[in-house]
Length: 157
Ligand SMILES: [Zn+2]
Picture (tube, protein in one colour):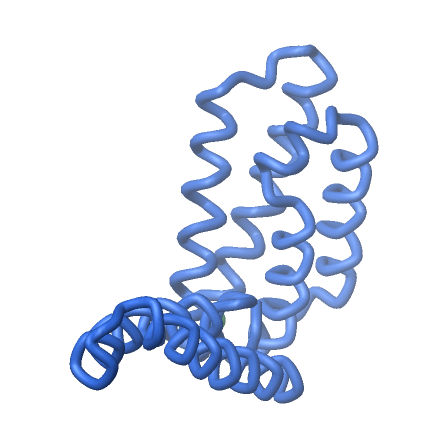
C-alpha cells in the first residue's frame, strides 16, 4: 500500500524531536542524517519492500523516542538502540541501493594515499616526509572528486 503522507509524517516527528532535545543528544541520534535517509528510502519504497518496512519501523521508533523524551525517560540504551536502527538503514541503502556515506570516498582514498605515500616516499626518495604529502594530495583529489560525483548523482546518504 502506498502511503504518500508517510515521509512528511516521519520528517515531522524528526523535526519535533530535534527541537525538543538537547543539541548533544540530537547529534548522538544523527537526526540530520536520518532525514536524508528517510528521503532516500521514501524514493525507493515504491519498489523496495525493505525500505518500506524500515520506514514503518522508524516511524514507530521515533514516536517511541518522542514519548520517552517527553517523560524525561530517554536513556543511553534508547540511543544505542536508535544507532543500531540507523546503521541497519545505512547498510540496507549501501547494499541494496549502492549508496555511499557522505565523505566515503574521501576517507577511503585519503587512507590509501597516505599508505601509498609512505611506501612511495621510502622507495623513491628514501624519505617518508617526501612521499606523504604527495600521497595525501592525490588521495584528496581523487576522493573529493568521487564524492562530488556521487553527490551529483544522488548516490550519497
Ligand atoms: Zn530498499
